[in-house]
Amino acid sequence: MSDSQITKRALAEAIKSLMAEKPMEKIGVGEIVARCGLNRKSFYYHFRDKYHLVNWIFYTELFSKTRGQVMEDPWEALSIMCDYLYDNAPFYRNALRVNGQNSFSDWFMEVMRPIIEEYFDTLFEENSDREFYAAYCAETIRASITRWLLEDPTIPPSRFVLLLKTAFQRIASKVASERIRTGHTA
Image 1 (cartoon, rainbow, N blue to C red):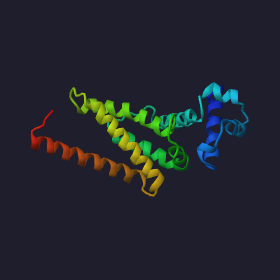
Image 2 (cartoon, one colour; image 1 turned 180 degrees about the vertical axis):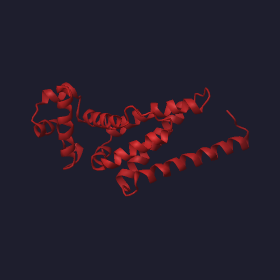
Image 3 (cartoon, rainbow, N blue to C red; image 1 turned 45 degrees about the vertical axis):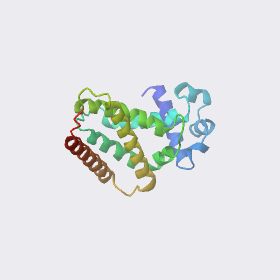
Image 4 (tube, rainbow, N blue to C red; image 1 turned 90 degrees about the vertical axis):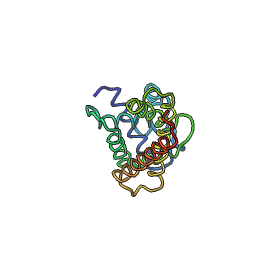
């Protein structure tokens, strides 16, 4: 592992341990670097701020689990993500409580939307509404995951994903039926 990766991992472990003790809003960069014996310069060489570090943790840890896997079914990808979030629930509950600029919640939405748009490319013909639907679905998934982790973490990930999938399928079925019934096919 390169020196850069070792430093990033040390910073990641430091913020994880701090977030197990207190809210993210009360953690400063000084505390993070003190926890792992580094200096502020090292932190800012690798990350813009603590939010960037949290986003990096999600990206590297989740995508290291899925590297090399081909997932045709977006529900499989969501299932893997929810398993990961559930396994790391205390950390992500803390991260999801932060709102505003650079927050994990906003970043998560921006990561989800292009993934959903790519999937929608296979579902929709040329349709300018595809971006609206993808943004809506990404927001719905983010809100559902946030509510699940913050309010009802006793639901296992497999059950949560099944509930989400069922809800989306039933809504899509109702919308399709209504469009056919009213003659709106576009």
